[in-house]
Structures are given as structure tokens and as C-alpha cells.
Image (cartoon, rainbow, N blue to C red; front, side):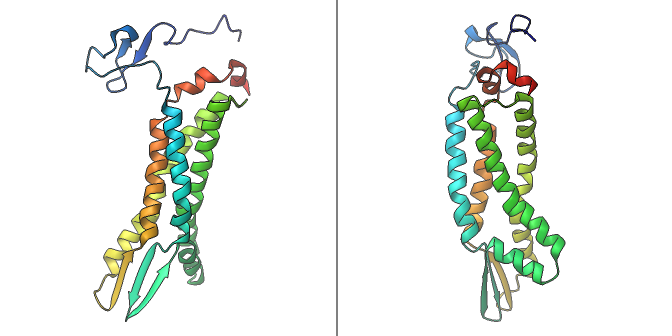
Length: 210
């Protein structure tokens, strides 16, 4: 499709959606006439905000995987498990399906989400020749799978509630649980604060057909 036949963007017409109520507003109004929210055509700083959150999440991924995530006490004996040792313990107990679920939710999903968001932000920042449709589809997948990353913390909380028996058997989260929760929270925020309309502004129209 030639450049002349492309429909104009709302920004060129002086129009934008209200981020709160989605009302179509004129940019010169400055505020949404329906709910009073300040409106702007693009959040130009959203890429920097998303990069900052994503880099912080990537750094926290190391303590989340290297430090113990659970502390188990049984008859005076204390056992500390990292994510990897916990998965390995489940494999040795012949609980392979549960081990696969925890590996996917605790290790694979966070790493793929960080990698995917980094690729997406790099494509916007450096105008990589990648199809916009492909990038948007990947972005929606990243948003969808992100909610399952909390499965590991959910399992820890349920386990602690079920087997906590005072001095006989006790289970509690360890420091890595906090780091892991922050990784999930920061990656979710990195995806939420990003103004995805910047993708359509910064990449060339010829990449739509890639």
C-alpha cells in the first residue's frame, strides 16, 4: 500500500483517546471533556520507563534464582530450597508434571517475558525491521502469559498454609520469594506503562508486510 493511500492517524488529525474513559478527544482541549483526565497523543517517555522497569526486573532475576525461595523445618532440621533445587527435588520424587509446571512458571515464563519485552523495546528504540503485526501479537502473548508467573508464589503460599504444624513441620517463604514477586510485578508494569502506539509511529510502513 502506498504512503498516499494510507489512512491518517488520529495524531495528525489532532485526535486521541482518553486513557481513562476512552472518549475521543481533541488534543487542543488538553483534558477529557467527559472525565477531566489530561490527554496527550503519545507518552514519549514510556519507552524509558519501560526500559528502567525491565532492567530492574532482569537484575532481580539473579537473586530470585540463586537465593532460597522456601525454608522447610521438620523435627528441628532446616531445609532451604532455591527454585532449581525445588524442581530437582520434585523430579526425584517422581512428580515430573508438577516439576514441569513450576519450571515453566518460575523460570521459563519470566525469562521469555524479559527477553520478549527487551526485543519489543529494542524494535521501537532502534527501528528494527520486524513486522509490526508480529510484534503486536508477541506483545499480547507476553501480557497473557505474565499472569501465570505468579503460580510459583501461589504454590508456596498454599504449601505453607497446608503443612504448617508449628514445631513438627513448618514452611515459610525465603528472601528469594520477595525478589521473584518483584520480578513479576516489574515486568507486568513494564508492559503496562509502554505506549504501544509508538511502535506504529517509529517503524517504517514497509515492515507491516514482513
